Image (cartoon, rainbow, N blue to C red; front, side, top):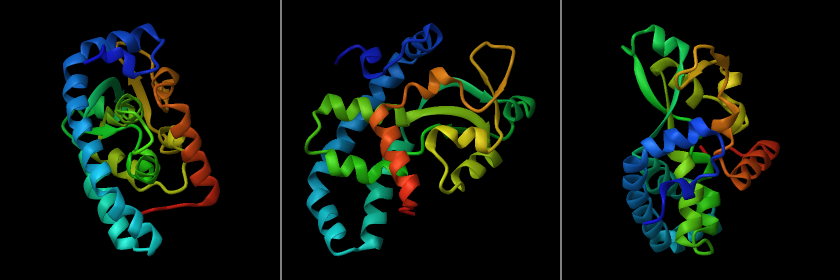
Length: 199
């Protein structure tokens, strides 16, 4: 298995240190995601048939159970924590996936047969990144509609700390946003522009 850092486009020293600390977790998630990829390849013909027949229920089931559900089980902690969560002494804390994966499911299915395993992992692993928020903030983020994936925390007005920094900011640190691959950002932007909502 390759160095865990090679799966991420990380240049910030704090982020690199964080990913090195998470090496075991990343390696465990790589194994899970390899299994997800195999399952997606196996059931892609059924998914494509659902697309052709406009079977919305079938698509939602596949996207939720095969992709979103499995990605949700993968967690790589980033050192991002909301101020509200910290002030609650973690009594209402939840691991919040920073980049929601459900809306990305069609894109991954469209490309799973064309991407190498390494390319799949480089695109999927950032979707496993989590922050610590309160359960209410998690709900607020999940309920957002037509908000760019990189703007979700700002729009929800969530103030965050990052690692050992003493000052907070509204939204995610740029160094964390930079971990999301450009092609996923572009796909998200196109869907927002079209008003696509696969829920």
